[in-house]
Image (cartoon, rainbow, N blue to C red; front, side, top):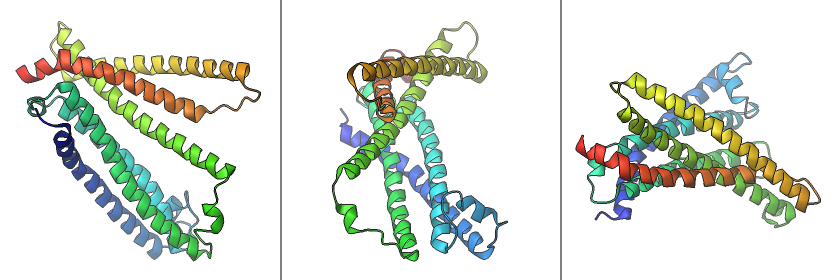
Length: 279
């Protein structure tokens, strides 16, 4: 029986190549765009206008910060798409399914390793961004750290709580998308195998599109009902209608991911595993 630690390490190392590749491409893109912004200064410069969406271009550090922020978003989306593809490649891989452990365990570790991979890239980007932000602050003669930054008060605790909720919401959203893509992929295979017509790529795409439309409709209805219940609860038990929609949304993401994850574990073990091994 393969241990969870060994399985996670193997998947993480395999996926880390994509994270390193995305990071390398981002660095080259930032350097190239930064040089173009420095060489061709002016209001008609596409790079300066691009970076100006985030930060003022009054100096080189502003330009670098703006380019880095926008390319970070694009790089994260690119890695996320690659990990979604890699997840399903592993889920339906005969080689991975032949490992002496349960298919549901492989699926859980597969999803978890992708989450850690996202965090791996994001932490590196945050560290590099903070370095640039510190130099950018001092270039404007603004101290990055002051004594008040380390003072714990009600406002700082509220800010930390808000960031924590947003982070939980972001992780929950990523987890929910990973899990839903697996569910749509598993259900598509099961449904197509039961159809009397020959399985083709077009048939699979149509079935998956229908599943996505149905899932979006159900998610919208559930979200509306949860929001109404939350509002009614505040009206009945709170003097102020201070709705914490970010926290509620994060909770919805996590509950949805857990429910769909349980369904995935059942599907991969009962319906998908045998077909992968026997094909």
